[in-house]
Image (cartoon, rainbow, N blue to C red; front, side, top):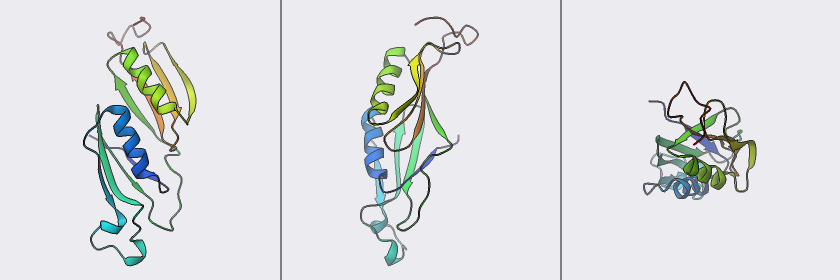
Length: 143
């Protein structure tokens, strides 16, 4: 199973704590560059994360900050797809992740799901939040 690995510019700890809160995860793990073994002294930044992870309902999400002095675009061309069991739960997740971010597609019913929306959260991560239809061949049914 593929595991998404996100990269941040100094916001990894904050972002993963936010995701843990949104999804109710209690297993947030963070290792800072300053605590990593065999890291050059120039990389020992106590604020940046060399590796972090948290469990989401559909699997593990891993992340890190770019190394000190390195630049890069966070999550520019990938979205995390997260399924929810109900429209109400999907809407709750969508609303929480959208705070401080930007909505790409409003949450609502589509031909393939009774509840779907797309957003970019305040950390630059793109999300697709969806409810799987009860009958995949009749995805336009209301929930």
